Image (cartoon, rainbow, N blue to C red):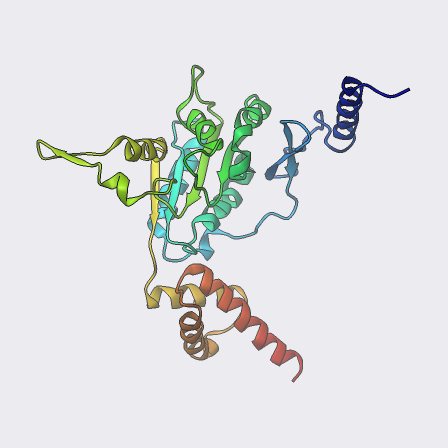
Length: 295
């Protein structure tokens, strides 16, 4: 006897439900004491997901980050207020690529993890699940940073509105144990076009943006604290390299050789940033230790 269309649909839905229960249990108990970082995973089988503990979190410390002292102090202060149960702001870290935005957030987690700070990494495509994530942690005693790395939107991105609600609250107040820390290369998180800027008007010596620009500014304005990151100069680039060489136990007697090689490295890459400095330090350290190993 052949199955009807509805019966086939019912069987398919039952199969999906069984698979989700097997591989994506929704009632899993999370070990909030043993893990300090989590990642939201969408099941893709239904419009839900789960928090996955991250066992190998980055070990970077604040002392390893050079050239961002003012940004570092502002973020430390804001986070300290947050975990003390005091008013604190959502933070947008924006600016040039490779300047330490993401590393600073990871280092902040390591500094305050033992005081109850936890981090949940949320990909921009998963931002529509923010209400589900918050529902899982709002009653917890820990303090949670929702970390959105390399955040940017297109005009019709579905996660755009979800983030706006979390940042500004809806009919309910924003949770006191949740903040959003986001990094982006774009100050306003959305692409900006020349045509939109042409709609800007000067009225009584005041600048009035067009509606499209105002909408884009509105999202970034919901972050109470902006931290700006700029390209570094040559000396700053070398200072970062020296810090990482010290970290890898490469002595000052090799720094002059390293400086010359580092400048050539940056020239070949067309980039002089914290990320480029880290990558050079990795290469230089590895090559030096390999030479020593086979002497």
